[in-house]
Length: 403
Length: 170
Image (cartoon, rainbow over all chains, first blue to last red; front, side, top):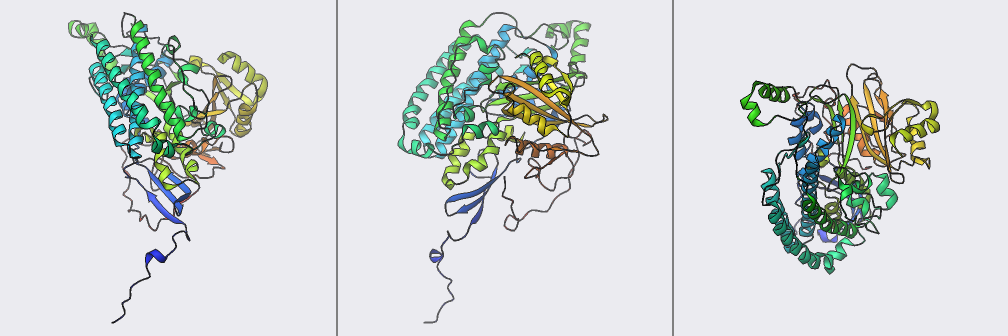
């Protein structure tokens, strides 16, 4: 028989002999946004990891400088698009700080309620996706179902599920619907039943625990040096929550706890997020119980549009409306930084005004951008398969990270 | 500590290294010199009464037409004392550089890469001065005020992922 020029069997080559370079992404099914890991692998061990972000960069900060102050609000929806209401609230709080505006109590309560519902949807998305990527399909679908119920609730208030644009300078667009209380009660009952199920399906699931525990550990010192906040910082045992440390929008009125971890691994991050959802529900229930009557926008014609019957019924109202829409509210010259607790940590807005009707500079401090900065070194020395849960627990949201 | 107390305390600790202070909207702000920024920020981080462990944010603002043209803005937070401070340094247009804070905070790595990408400010001593949100072939720095918002970028040839030599030092 004639010999063939068959190459040596690939099985006989030792793949561990050389370092392999692999690019994971930018469109990997487990990379929620679009992100690329440039990996150096020794067998299955990650030797080095370089992370490329920016695939979803849309120039938020540049676009914010083009319109009036209120026209930035729809862009903020598109930052962290699983909890857009927190972005809305954070942005208007920063501008209101610059204007010295204090919104009515009812508006503060509504903002708290909507922010906390958003925080729950944020955590549900993060945990649902992380569970699904580790093979826990049913837990994933259950958590997403719980999120759907809450998004229906958000839709009933704001008219949209994701692109809500709910806040305005000096208030919110509309009041809670009359049957909000009953709908919320039903949604939370449904959500709590699902969380109970997922507690059994995930928290005490052998496979899930083994995949999460002891993986992706960040020390407390590193977490602080990397500027990590939110569940990533709290998993290391540091109890820093902007809502407690520097309360805004009346958070000091509510009784809630800040869950913290001990070791700073993925399982601790999972538990922090999981337990935070119950705390958020507690805040919403307290806020709804104590919800004061009154207006939902501040009574200040410099910043707030006149009522519609004045616009269509009087020349002064029409002029007022026209001036505010065309020139924008005149925000006093100066600068302000306002931090709120986003789903992923401290979401900061640094706004600079030159006294005209347009923002001079709007800067977002994106919590998951810094989380991603810490991810590369964290993954080093671990297994390829561990990239998925560690990355999942950073909860990178492309819109927020890349802006 | 109220912002006023904090600024008074800083005047004692840093003395003439502070060029200017203000506390608009309750945010304590100091302006320091660019050359000794690294030393001053190290004092801010390590001094027990100040203890700003967190570099919360690092960004720049382009004040086109002013001298110096840019401000590099640091937002610091102290976990132990629960107070915040904004530190600003002026950066002239002709020499757009500042000292890198990577030796003090790991967070500075990506934040400074972003400031370089968006404003074209070099950070001296940065271990990995690549662009971060934009691609390497991008021309200009988009958040500068003289970068037109509708500007088109030249088409760049597709990169061959096999032959590109990726840098591994992030």
